[in-house]
View 1: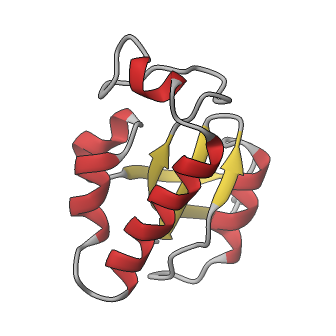
View 2 (view 1 turned 180 degrees about the vertical axis):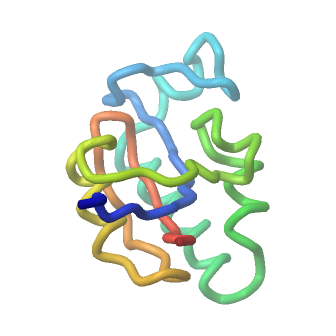
Length: 118
């Protein structure tokens, strides 16, 4: 029996409480270490509003703002099954319908918005 798979893209904003406070956009972590969780949530909320209002595409903003290396693929994480991602991320992704965008999801990596793509 095959496990249920989803495909998703995400946009990650790291903050000073993130487990690894550096990224491809901020290799030494200077910006991330000075970003509060509240500021990261506020930035991500504004980016989500740009997407849901139709003023910007998920992929364009993920490519520009995400602290995950998946930004190079417009946020695309590919397909995955349960048990492969941090629990809050997994639960949020599997709860979405294809095409839907999550609210803010908080993990040890930072704060995310997720778009289920498959």
